[in-house]
Length: 347
Length: 246
Image (tube, rainbow over the protein chains, first blue to last red):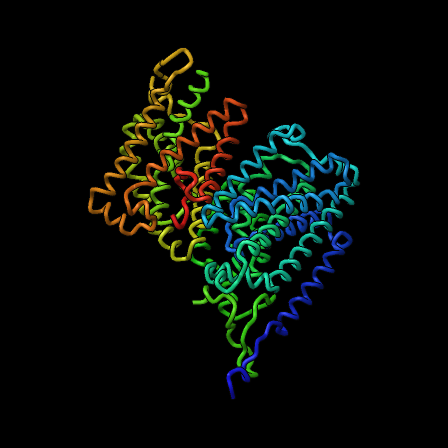
């Protein structure tokens, strides 16, 4: 009757197995999108996939890594810029989108080494300055023509319908790969280290977590995701204007999606992206008031529901759809209350 | 040679303006460890208040300050109660998120109200907007810029006197988390130094290349941020961002 005999640690539950199965089915179904939906729906879904990319990668950085960056638009903008450059150099457009994201991820590695020495607010503002600096430097490139910008002319080579379908598939694939990558990463020992750092950096270091290496991994993954999103956005809009791509508004969108959906939860940002997508569809035309609403909503969530809608659902109902942690279950009783995951936030 | 000297002088004066803007941010950060991302938006809000007073009611901006400053203080108090105190309870990251949301709200409310047109208080301050002292053929010193720098020095000096000589000031220092604030007001003069470093860097950058103004400023900002990571080697620090273990 020792406690260890009646306790077991569980990760997969029937519910989470079901969720993963359903998610896979949805992804497979979405892959047939261009054959099933109208061009308008295809474009809308492409936008949604890009939002999910932005939300989950910003959440990985802030929610799991504890690194709030206000400068993620640097990677978004550079992803698009690198695509323009690579396409201009003669590379086929769609491989160029992927390659540019990889290039930006490689570039983010030395940046990580420098920026990760900064803490909390310093890191946040430092990233913003890096983004502004990158914006100014990109403006100097003759190809871009300053704020006038340029276009991804190479896209003209594709017939309209084919271009929309290709962009859709690339976005869907990018989103799926990133989601799987993050799920695997967060379930790995590195993921445990990441969450330990978020909860208490000193304590994590004291049990042997390699702080800087771990943060660097998440920083590069987040940079890769944002760059991919920027490159894909370029494929949907065709025009590249530095002012638009390096706008802090992208980070505002990311913060909105993650705060509303659930900071530091895996499912939350996906829900947040869907909510943001719907809010934009209904209120986006209202321009300034729409932005005021976004800012105010982010503010209210930060103050009153810092773990977002999904964080609230998790705490309230003990739901785990996609398990990135473990929970200890007593005896053969059905799990009533989740025990281990974010000790700090569960007060 | 004189051109460079002129750029440095103009840079120092510009730095006074930056220091004036940053002093509140710096003070707040040293006492509460909050970086208020809405600080700049609040400064612009105050400027628009002055503009409305001058434009609609014909009140001189200098008199207008007597109205706007208490109003802004009241807004600051309300934000402290409604937003900042609550944010602080959520940990290190929540204030960044909440003040960022706040800045989006303020920026867009102002945009909604006033549009994207450039406004200037210059028509309401008469000669002061363009009067200058001619030192040599190459060097002119704007009177408004000197006034701004003087205001920054006065404000920072006044803040230091307040912190060291009054009961309330001592109480604030006692609760401050920043050793420099507790010890005196090191971070306040750091603000002035930081502003001047930024201003001089920008105006020298602008002299090198028309695009250089912002680029040089940003580069210097990052350099200072990282220089500070190698402790002891560099005496100066940027006012807004100071190390945790200072």
